Length: 164
Length: 119
Image 1 (cartoon, each protein chain N blue to C red):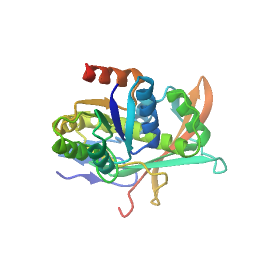
Image 2 (image 1 turned 180 degrees about the vertical axis):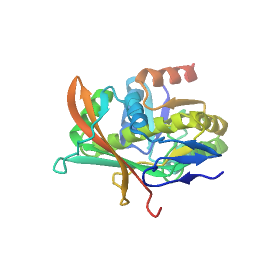
Image 3 (image 1 turned 120 degrees about the vertical axis):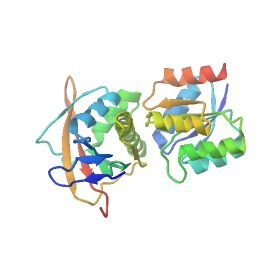
Image 4 (image 1 turned 90 degrees about the vertical axis):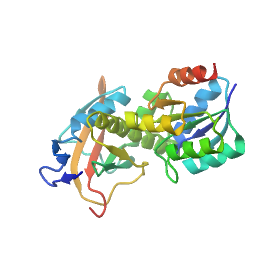
């Protein structure tokens, strides 16, 4: 079995067993998996950048197997707090909010792994870490979150793994 | 009432599961942060049931189930994981897990699974 990744414009293309999978980690797939977990409307925003001045939470999880990338979610702490309230009815802050954010990203990417499995793509994920990879970000999706009106935003970064 | 051991690397998920079990009259007798702790706590505490995450540091949940089942073939372990693909579920069941709860889950789902297993 040979997996071939081509970086740059075709960053998300890969082949497996002679079959080419196109842009598996698209904004649509990520948003779709987020919508399976979160009771909000989520749409891509091509301009937004999470403010560096706000208190932010960053969680990274590595994918390995047929796809080897690091997926990072970054958002304002208050956004994750809203997610926690909506999902579990809990007011979270500090350590427990960080822990919730880690679990949330784990659940979202778990959904992507499950979807991939139904398409013959074998990937697994690592445990979450509260940091961003040091490698170049090759793809960024800025996502607005709506609950009737816009309540915040998160950014998703797809990066190569360190040393690759 | 069942005596339950929760094994999950995320403190938040342990908190959620503990709340569900306590609200439904069960006792959480231990919490492990990884598979290795889970196996050690199982041997120390002999719980009635174990909830086991899959992706964890030190020792993953599937390997932990195998070790627990090797120690006690009658052990009752329920997997609780965000990864719900067929391969993972099959691997867990082959390792000896009784059931599989996919995250995110509702309280009703957890209660339903445990009620079925305790009947």
